[in-house]
Length: 368
Image 1 (cartoon, helix red, strand yellow):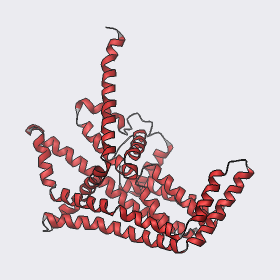
Image 2 (image 1 turned 60 degrees about the vertical axis):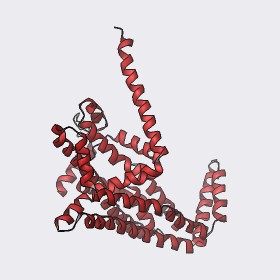
Image 3 (image 1 turned 180 degrees about the horizontal axis):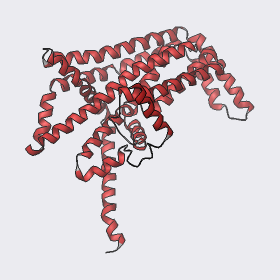
């Protein structure tokens, strides 16, 4: 048999996978309005399971424990919403002064670009847009937020029902598998639940800590509306790799608005760098751990793909769902090579020999 004949089955399999991928992600995109609240609700419900079990152990029934769990989530989001709303309202009240600072800073950037022969047509257009804007334009951000309130409430309803009927869903999945595989199915479900609990709960705790660190640092260097920038930068840390870059860019923008000097920008870089070092080498290993061991290449790829399909919600949920898919692949013999491919195993020793990796292990040993 020729080598071409041997490659035909492999090519057919690749084409079949590509077609399946196109149909799968196309369906996710078309049904995004239905699937996004449900996908987020599933992760929230999995995260709240330990707390609900603890409350039920104290004597509460399933309905009451599920309701209290949802109230905790609601209280968190209400707190964030009130802080952001207050800061945006303050920004709207002082918009004329802020607009003058933005225009002045943008004019300085335009002059610098003109001196260096860089086209400034886009900058000029932005200056014109800013000059025409008013405080009411800033307040429109609040009305846009309220437009998403319906989906948010639907997400909470889904999460409550998933918590309330979690026993039924678990038995349904076990009934789909042969009796001899029941124990293995329970093990898979526990691993999936563990990923959501450790990753999402840890990430939300990191948001609080990072927001406090950013807020304190930004206030010290004199950034206006430091808390709204800090909260947004903290929330964006949910998005691997890209979130910190977007948050840092936003902080730099507000630093320029606040004082229009290079010192503010340098201060932002110092604050962000210190916070990121603490997050990567102290906070994340202690709080989140390495429950989602994914290859950085596939992590970035799934985040970009999630953003293309579901925008920001897709970028946030992409990583934990890829971790769940890896668990399913790990427990399927024919798909174990794919689980190995997307995993972040250190068997080859390359990662262990890196300076950053040795520094990370040293910090872990000293802290723990």
